[in-house]
Image (cartoon, rainbow, N blue to C red; front, side, top):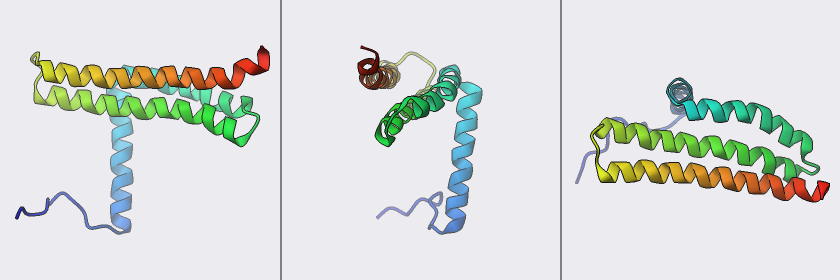
Length: 127
């Protein structure tokens, strides 16, 4: 039987505080090292309030703002995949390249879904 990881915590309020700190470190690292995350964050600064203003119901507001936040979430996951792949090797490797491409595709699909959600809410009002 394998030993439990010494890096796993057992729980409690201290674990929650540490987890929050790690999350803030992750957001900071994404901001510092990922141009796409910075661009999408600036877009979110504009679009989240706009979505809250344009939504007529709570559901529409959640959809419009939530989809934009979803783009940031998928970008963070993509950035984590890219960082891990680069930590393994910066040499060309087909599987590492595939992992990066798949992460990028996930971001693209989320952006397209976000555009479709915004269009489905806003176009009927102006058509």
